[in-house]
Image 1 (cartoon, one colour):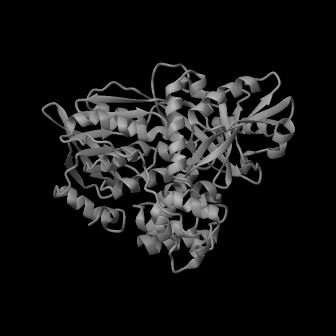
Image 2 (cartoon, rainbow, N blue to C red):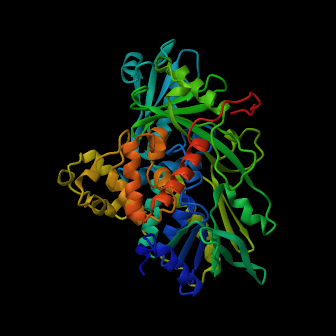
Image 3 (cartoon, rainbow, N blue to C red):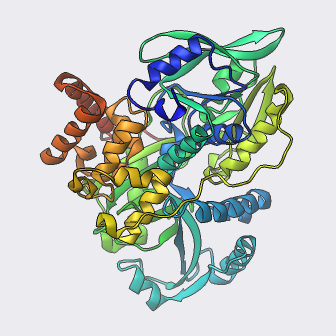
Length: 545
């Protein structure tokens, strides 16, 4: 069985059999299937190391599908003096835009300036001058009040002086994880979801492997490796705790809400200082919708459970969007969906989580290499630092130069051949790389049409269900595609849409009517509990946002 078959029907069972028979002997066992773990697996496999990645839930289930979707340089980190993080982030942002257009794309940002309110145009443009120097590009430009009102109808006009435009980038974070995992598998990495590392195996005082559990079947097995890398992000203290490691992670929750673009049509991502506390909040276009976020508050611990937006956070975000765009008059009833994620901040004792630094940290506990913190943008650099710490435990670690590229290049398929626009084809090629043409080569041409309210094609659902280790309906609708965030009712509000999704799951995953009903019920429970609106508060939620 080839690695490419491991995510298809029957591939999971065959892979577990190989692990049980010790036909696969990893040099590197990566625990955690978010962007950090994916990046480590990609870089390890590139170096010819036998690599096994396990994730106890679904790939990108945690932080890496619930971020603000921004690949940015961290302008506010530079403003606070963290020049190193900003410089590295800007360089990686430029690299990703060049390597994966359609997946990581430039997005223009806007800071509106108001008389008597920070920041003023002069100070902000001086900051952007340095920011653009890092990118070796001039992205910044000033817009007059009239120009700004033309591109952002309904913006708060009282004391408006104009605005400064600059650039960062935007992505689909879960899709980015999948692309990186596909690249890792092309180089031979084995990647399994719903496989938990329950305990560590130690020999002569050093970690040499882990006891794994297939959470679907309950089957357990022992896997030994030259080195174990803990890339579980906000959950990193769990494995470190087995070795007596001191808790270092400060889980911080960030929440977002999604509304129709027609209600608040934006071409720029607006950075808005919240009128209550001056925290920067983004209001931005994403995947045919408009998103408002993020909050930033202590999560009060971490567990292996979903998190969702609270009523207080919801009101906080409604306040800021209606402050900046009073003409939009956004209300609770206008919200299509929400999402919340827990960021792994490395605690320094700062009183406010917003003041914690965003750079990553690495610990070596008896041979367990743990990495946490950092930014989505710099995942490649984080992976390289983790492997540098791990190389002391790997015999014959290759000591040669490797290309810095993450993604394989390839020609974008001819859009006209499939009746698509060049923009949509570019997006598909970014999302799926060399698999884009295979995805589109279907006998049913109607599958290459978009699902209502989204940019997602029906053929994307078919492809993901057949080729991307989908186990549950939420894997397909919340992470392989983002229909659950973009379409009404999590994508199942419309009867025709539900019927088509059901047909795809039956055809590609072999689900019968009983399994479909079970998965539909499971999915809707998750969606209503964590991706819709929170229950109305009784007033006891007093935590700051």
